[in-house]
Length: 154
View 1 (cartoon, rainbow, N blue to C red):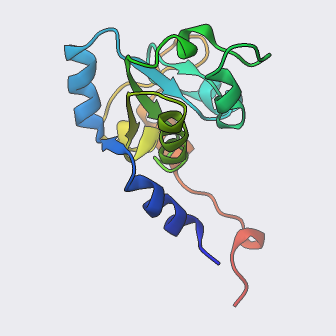
View 2 (cartoon, rainbow, N blue to C red):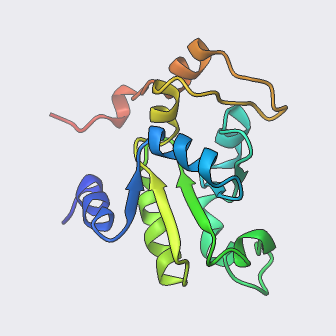
C-alpha cells in the first residue's frame, strides 16, 4: 500500500511545478495566463489569488470537457494556453496537472507549495468579495490544525 505523499511524489515526476516567485514572474510576463484554483468552493471564498478562477478538483475532469453540467468553457478552450493550477499546499494540484495533461492540456503547471507558499512569499490573497485578506488571517488559515482523532494511533 502506498501513502499519500508517495503518490504525490510519483505524479510530480510527470508534471511541471513552479514556485510562487516563478508564478509572480509568469503573471507579469503572460497576463493571459489562466490561474486555476482547484480547492473546494469554501476554501476559494475564504482566500484566493487575484484573477484566479475556481473549479473544484472533484469535477475537474468534466469541467475540462464539453457536454457536461460541470463544463467550464474557458477551461475547455484553453488546452493550448499557459495554465497554473493551485491548491492549498501543492499536492492536489499535482494530481490535477497530471489528469489535465492526459486530457490534452499542453502547458499546465502546478504551484509548488500552493497558496500556503504564496502566502509565505508574502503575496496578496483576496476573499470572496475581492477584499485583500490580512496576512495574519492567512497565516492562521494555512496553519495545520490536526485533531487528535486524525492522528495515527500509537
